[in-house]
Length: 98
Image (cartoon, rainbow, N blue to C red; front, side, top):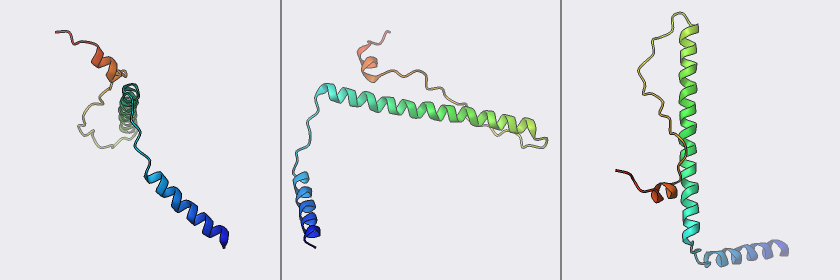
């Protein structure tokens, strides 16, 4: 019983100590790195959605080809290729040509 009471007390005190810790201040380099990671994750999500769209189009075309009385294709927007990943810091550093 004493062990449980000690464990509860330690957990309660550690929660208070953790709540009082200041928020970390990020340097400009760390902010840029975090922004790049966020942009890369967003781009990978777009690439995955594109690959899924292409595979669904292929599966639907295969189904329409193999089934004699398949419904006609409903018009859907074309799959948009997101292109290669361009980091936002590189895009901001390169001046726009007019």
